[in-house]
Image (cartoon, rainbow, N blue to C red; front, side):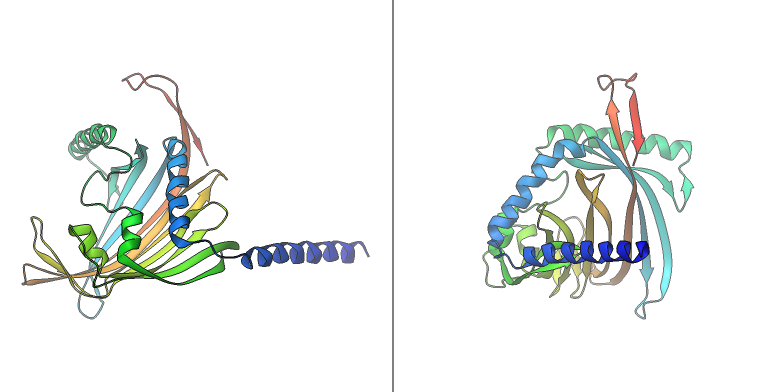
Length: 282
């Protein structure tokens, strides 16, 4: 009897949880533009917390031939941390082997310069390359099929988007956006991007030191999840890129990234040589 009662309580609890989530799924959908503004605002509020986190990212890049057979595989391991809202990657391993002393010295010099640049770069501006605001991106995109789904068990607002070919654009980032289509999953309670899938619908020519054409079908997937019940951080990404470089060489690559080993640290002194950082693994 006691076993049956426990089972009954479990079934009732599960039914209640499902009914609450189903009720949430029946609420009217928010305006997508307003939703994405809230996503940006929530991200800005979390930036200060993000500064207290580090994590490990393991990245694999594979060169493949026209038949999809792997020709070459390279891997890198990084220690990631945030400075003024910008993520900084410090390389610690190459092809699963720790960097030698010379490579470590060069990496320290590179990261030091990058940290200095990040401290001077506004949070809403990228460290490198072109950028585009969410508001401007939505002006270039047609948003379709907005809906609510359960994703990882939570109510999530989902919508498809596709670049408008007739949109007037300026600059590399806006031009590239016209050639994209994809789907975005936004966690409804936290107003954070949980998952993104995007692909090129047409060839896109890149000019900037290297002339290359990213070919139709190149795609990208990105995931985030909640860490320690307080902060959303990346958990992984993957994709495929097909390109033609200088009209001569074809480039086909697959890449994947896994993010893990999140740690929260506390700085106990000013950023000097004797700064002590206490790390708590989560």
